[in-house]
Amino acid sequence: MAYLEQIGFLILLGISGWLIYKRVSFIKRNINMGQSYKPKGPSSERFKKMMLLAFGQKKMFDKPVAGIMHFLIYIGFVLINIEVLEIILDGIFGTHRLFAPVLGSFYSTLINFFEILALGVIVSCLIFLIRRNVLSIDRFHKSEMTAWPKLDANLILIIEIVLMFAILSMNANDQILQNAGAEHYTETGSLFISEMLIPLYNGMSVEMNLLLERFFWWIHIAGIFAFAVYVTYSKHLHIFMAFPNTYFSNLSAKGKIKNMDDVSNEVKIMLGMQQPEGDAPPPSSFGAKDVNQLSWKNLMDAYSCTECGRCTAECPANITGKKLSPRKIMMDTRDRMEDAGKHGLENGKFLLGDFIKEEEIMACTSCNACVEACPVSINPLEIILELRRYKVMEESKTPPEWTAMMTNIENNFAPWAFSPSDRFNWANELKSEN
Picture 1: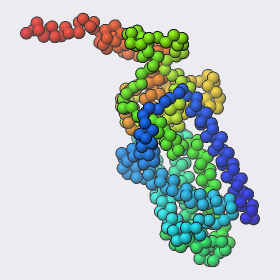
Picture 2: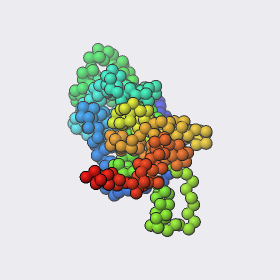
Picture 3: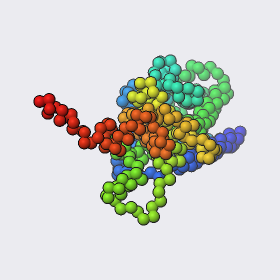
Picture 4: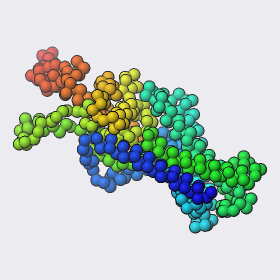
């Protein structure tokens, strides 16, 4: 029977690994659809930013209560995986608590620490469920946060509660079996948190406790494997994507809008500041209509989005009732990537028009508040600007006010409808009055 359990575990491990590999390859192909992007700035600064934002969760503490709970879930998820490593090795080799003889008395301290974290994760997840479903926090109830996004956010919290409860119940039954002198159940000492669950399982037969200990062991490890696969389809992919995304993020001053190189070069040539390149091909298009015309960093941003909605909560256009939601821009970009990855780019759909509407991008004030608010350095503004550039320069579709302003800039070198020679008329009028 022990061999059957090991074989079953290896099959489960293999299937999970294969599914994760397939999904990660798919995501990598989708990101590689994007145009080239060269991050600027020294690697040491990038690493520092990654450690502060992705590992240290620095921006999450802008809202201290939510930040502490989020950090507790995050650190619990990371550290408890050390115990998962032991469970995986036990599953492969058919052992039980493989690390206990090696670590001695420190093993008990370590498991107690993990159990405290597990309890913290349960409490934090319950509070997050209440915040998301009971309290009227506006950013959790926007139009883009219905159906799957809402279900996804709740599912992940419920799964984490189940996983933590399973590991505590496993340890509770383990302690009962230790006290009963069951074979192979290594003495761990007192485990304070799981001890509180012992009354639930005490008084049963040894066989039933054995069955329950194995049941919760399998629930926990199968749940971890299923969770690992599920995360690649979920917004919780940001747990992993936040690291490369912050490392490759733009180190330039926030608010600096990237020029269009093709246009800049033409202007410089016209002003005699630069000589034309002999055989340089003309640009095929300006801006972006679909995901393959954005940079791979823009596409990585979309897979890194946590859907927390802090960007939308800070967006002045959204606050004043406009259609624009920076969070929806990122979600739509990811959805289009998934669509293009499954059905190809030439499937008659485009990011601009089929997923993101003109009304949304035209409402952006380019204030950069969404970029500043993002806890993992996502830049929705770059995507909005590229889509808007396509709309203006390829389709010549701009609001009449914009057209008038741009005509004035072209003719009068200023946004106003006055000739440069009339610019100081107001001063002359003041002189005549005096």
